[in-house]
Length: 373
Image (cartoon, rainbow, N blue to C red):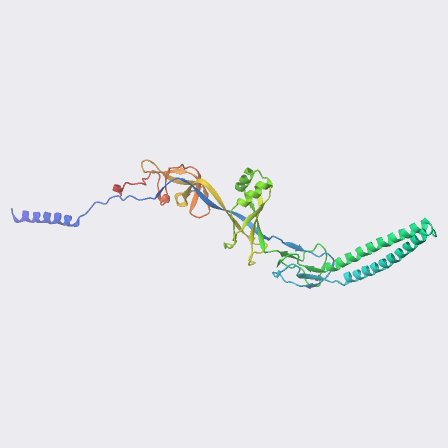
């Protein structure tokens, strides 16, 4: 072996050694892992939401019963008042004069009645002694009855005048909070004008309408009074959520459901009563009533298993050969931000892709034996 051949062998040996020391492997295809779920039925509580408006249980419109000049406004907007608190005062002078005149007329009628009574008793005594005729007795008796009727009429007039004078001072008919006061001192007021609203806010009613689901259940009860009351009593407590998303801390209960379905909307008007011990609820506040509605024996899947494609909802079902096939499903949001109810498209025992569903391609293998991973 000459030097040239020896040099070639050395080079070949070094190359082989170098390749061996690098331990180079050919790149292998990595299998992507997906999380899957076996479909089954279960019970779930769905928060059903309805738009609602708060109203005091005893909201009372305050209007004057008499006409006159408003001389005093004794309360301010938003003030808490108790039953009997003076709210407004209307100039009472004319009513006071009318009362005095009515009382004077009553006194005159009482005096006339007294005289007529004496005359009747005197005539009756004379008649019994055959001194006067039957005609004279009857005339005296009629005069006495007329005097008594005049007294009744005068007393009624005086009482009416007294009531009218009382109307000049307007008091709160219920305990509550004062609403807007659109009038000012010195203005002329008359019956029919709204001076303010006293909202009885110890308990507040949230007014809302329920849709078909609750209507159907009530129809099953037959809509009799007893059954409706029984159904209302069985409903769970509800929550009131303000427009800003704040949840009112006290729970309420549905207290009434109208027995007539609105022909246009197919809904029923309802009221839910909420305690208001701190006075945080006011009439007119708008928000949302949340009714926990129980769905029993339904298919529930996580929202990340549903792929939205235009107007379709797809779920990737795992086939026997571990590949995924997209199928159309119909789902309903349960309102918890995590799950949805499948109403069609899946059966119990089906296996579907959950985590990673948005990355699956039709026919892609999504399950791998441990030896393939």
